[in-house]
Length: 148
Image (cartoon, rainbow, N blue to C red; front, side):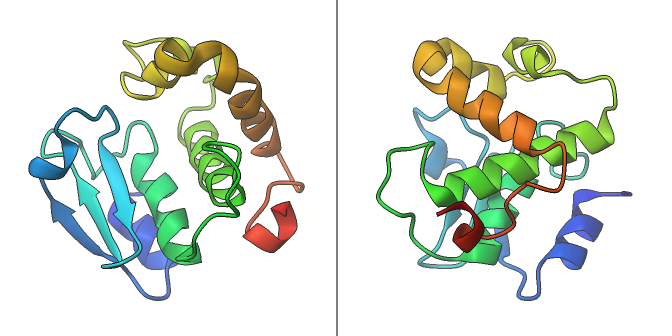
């Protein structure tokens, strides 16, 4: 994979608008977010979209591809996040063969993903671990019907 641009072009039939934005991220740790209302992926100016080192553009592209609301389960246990995190983890495994689940907790390797464990650790770790394991193979969800 040469860049996140080629990934998005390949993955999405209707490509979302990508906007570098500062205001939307005040007080937030994630470097990206998807807006279903405007079909836009917002990105912090400091995030490297070309290499997507933490897979956030992949995560948001799954939101864009689905472009639906979640099933009202809590974050990150809802079906939309399950699809997005599984795709993100699959991307991380494909681009860095040596990465293991516990690496996601390393703030030097994954500065924003590691915050998911720092901030929500005990609550989210089993859920994210499940998605990590789902990213290994054929049981990985590709749409919300498969995960509902």
